[in-house]
Length: 376
Image (cartoon, rainbow, N blue to C red; front, side, top):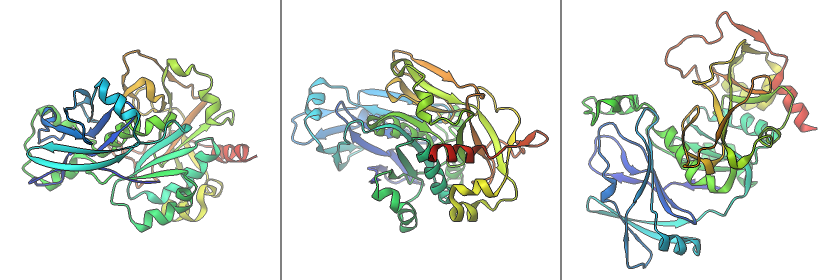
């Protein structure tokens, strides 16, 4: 499926800004996803909603919001009568009024839970990593992929993913928003911050996509895994991912976290080889891996239960639901993920250190062992 989001653009601004990146509805509510721009105030209390022919105006009266660093906003309507109305419908028409601008959206409800395990990621110019990544995780038991493209969808991307689209293995989402704060600063040299703390709101499109997947596509899947295209989860016991998840009480679990192991393929031309070889790239080149894991806090990645999470950051859960559930850190003796930090052009950390310097070993084709085991 190809999903084109429903953004509400704010007019007369120096660079593209949006009241929200998408509006959608579920059995329970109507919701919108946005971010906190560092220099423009979105007055969500002044957003008015009309739905079909209902003789009532609604407002977004509930908010889940994170202001720091990985900023994102999820607003929704809590109304018992509206909930009953939405349960009976698969399509609705919404009028959104804000700052004397009215826009109409025709929305379709997603079907109820279809998958046990789905993965999601945001990608842009590293699209060449998609096929080996998808094929690998299909073998490990991932049933579906929610792929957020940080540009306008074009033939290059649809042709690359056509086989997966035809088999309903992927949902391709257009997510053409500014990625990080430096892009805003390049577009507006005289940016004026609303709050001094907003200068730290570095990430934009990624936390929005994560919040969108949690609150919208999360209605379709039991578990969501947040891993990038250069991150490969491996198990020391060559298990499928569900074999790990099944060890935990689902209702009491918020997330399963995995340690990061910085990795590299020796003397590999990543862009060319990943397209030509698929995941067989791992048989042609040796993997170098950091000896110890990268922290229990900073660079973990997780698989979450969307029922028990309000906000998930890039590396860990930021906010639980009211009934706090457990966040479990997997021992690196059981499973971890290899982060091939050069796949997308370099390390995306806060500096340009070589994370493998003076501290590495060659793995015995760990990923290919996983591929072989799960292909039998």
